[in-house]
Amino acid sequence: MLKYILLGLLEYRPMSGYDLESWISVSAGNFWHAKLSQIYTTLKSLEASQHVVSHIEPQEGRPDRRVYQITEAGRADMQAWLREPITETETKKDGLLVKVFFQSPQEKQTLLTQLRLQMTLHQQKLAEYRQHTPLAIQQMIDGQPELVGNALLWDSTRRFGELYETMYIAWLEETIGRVDQML
Image: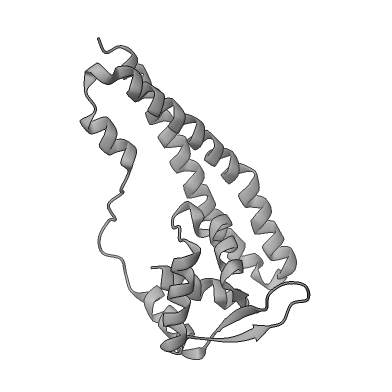
């Protein structure tokens, strides 16, 4: 999947691996994440398969940077993938749910601490989707007005993140209430 996220972002403009990591964090970050090392590994693979090409861009006072650009083969692969239907739901992996499932009722305070910590983290993520992400979308279209139509779809994925965090916070509130009532 990271392959297609990188190809999709490179359809907008050429970018370095670092640029791609930054854009993933403010765009696809609510439904996909990747470490910089994974991004560079995938970019090397995409270059080897001729889906992207790169060139070195000199920088003054900083190390030179490698900038990647999508090729026609990369565009064709991306378009073919976009046309393929997804015929199954994806299973959500969540470490907190594993801990809640296996936690001993005798460890009530440990569980409450973890649930409250997650509450704080999910509230922060919700605030990010409501404040920071819309600004990042606006900055992207300010720099490339031809992408204004794409912004509606980007905002739709941002909205998914916002609704997901709202649901998760509601679940945390309910679960904290249940655990509080345990003996």
